[in-house]
Length: 296
Image (cartoon, rainbow, N blue to C red; front, side):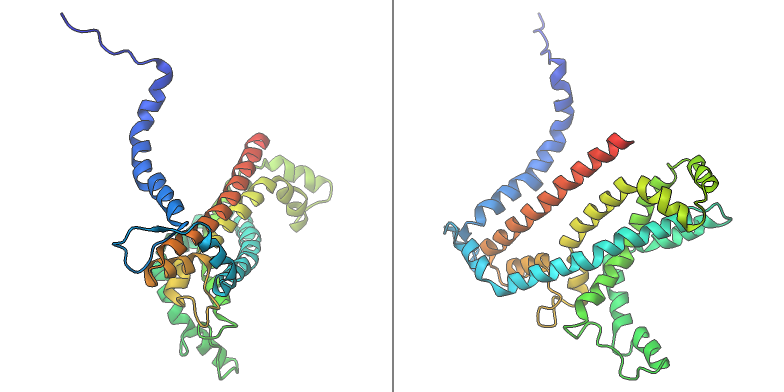
């Protein structure tokens, strides 16, 4: 006689489908995150074969007095202020431009999107060549009369802004596509009605496009802010945080403490602070997304 088969209540069926993914996420994301949280309250450095020593809030106290950390916080805030407004406004202009019904417009869309699919390693190396002392940018400056050129990556006054330009160049096409999806959801009848009321040309975009694209503008602002907070590859490839820490961001400082200085416990403390900041931005992103869904 066969035993009765196990009957699973229907309400548990979705969780069985999620179980493999949850196990993988637990082993690769949640468990390491919990270990990092524990290590942030320990001294774990240099000799990684030793057991971490519990030190409580010592790492947080050290963080509060770390001038280099606060300099990286300032650089990260500067990155946010410099990059996010450009990545909110400029891609919208590009999206309006490529939303025109013209022959071959798809080629322009592909051209603007190409930097997104280029590897950051390749992009960073290419831009580093452009920024070189005898690179293309300084060659152009010499042609127009600036003989000395600009130390794009070797001057504390220029380095972080030079890296920002690469971030903007890489992100324009991505955010343009987000805006393009929003623009194509706006009925043409609204623009026709606005034209009858005297709003035409660029005015129609200020009267119609910008208000209706409000949720998309907010979404792009939050996403670009999260990306700017986590910037790392550009800095690592182009400046490695120099000169004199002028382009060093929080994420790069975390990497430096963990893998160069082997200050694992202290690096986890920096990661904990960064996690709280990104968590706040992510919750803001979730709220913005829910608002967009309600409007839709």
